Image 1: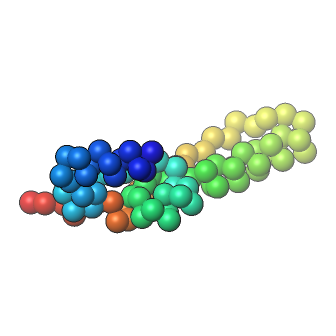
Image 2: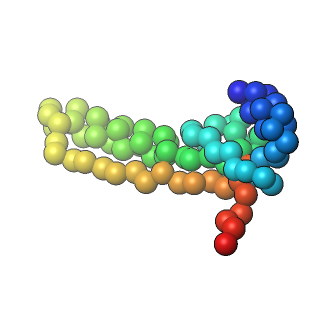
Length: 85
């Protein structure tokens, strides 16, 4: 996908981070290595919450009424432009 992105931008005469922003989702090691601005959905925190709920359900014999919310985080890297006024 990265090659297609770079090729498509180059064909249009654009450079990610200078002329336009390119944003991914998932915050993988690959996106970090590529300098791709990404949305981190908080998978690690989600796993921790699920583990806690399952562990408590197993010890109490039933699921509780717990709920949780995890806010995503925008990680700005090389592929985003600055805001223009």
